[in-house]
Image (cartoon, rainbow, N blue to C red; front, side, top):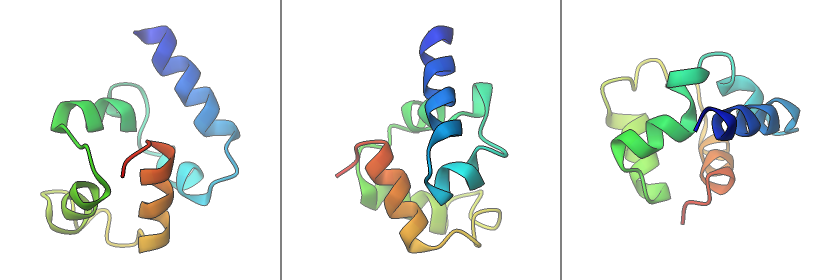
Length: 79
C-alpha cells in the first residue's frame, strides 16, 4: 500500500499539471488524493465538484477553478 502511494506521489510530483502541483502542497501521505477519494467513495467528476464546492472543506478549495478540478478528475480517471 505504501509503495503504491509512494509511486503515485512521485507521478504527481513530476506531472506538468498545475492542479497536481497546487494540490501536492497539502495532499500528501494520509491526505493524498487517492486516500481521500477512496475514503469518501468519489466515483465521478460530479461528486468531486460537489465535494469541492459544497463540502465541509469548500472554503479551503474556493481558489481551485473548474479547469483544475477537471484535470484532477482526468488524473484520477473519473467520468
